[in-house]
Amino acid sequence: MTNKPRMRLSGIVLGSPNARQLAAFYQRLLEWGEKSNEPDWVMLRSPDGGAGLSFQTESDYVRPVWPEQQGRQQMMMHLDIRVDNLDEAGAHASALGATLADFQPQDDVRVYFDPAGHPFCLFLD
Image 1: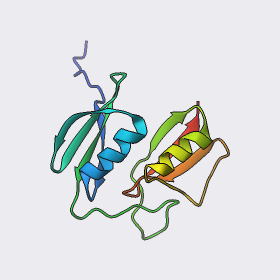
Image 2: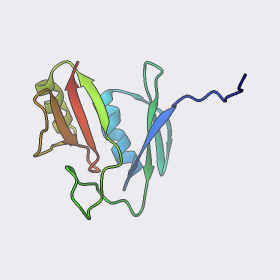
Image 3: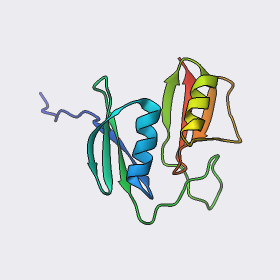
Image 4: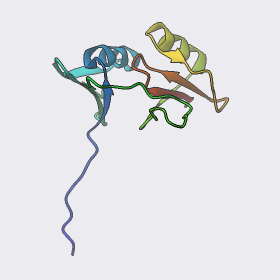
């Protein structure tokens, strides 16, 4: 029998020029509470107990481009957010500071950029 360590994803960390500002955007977007708040590090907790989101200030942060472009900063990851209504969720995200991407690859998904430029997808439940 092999002893293997127990591993569980506890969170996802997004870099940003300002951790507190980006955390505030996602806190309002997802209606999640704070777990901790330090000058350059903020953790949000998922109300259902799943993996949380954390935000770290990075002084040399470079916004990613999407869709990808050779020689430019690539996105390293993106968030998928399930919604009941794309139009209502998109209007909510935009009101909080998200920007709708020019390129939309699918009819049932909307790609947005958060205030730090990270792409995230809203998709139908």
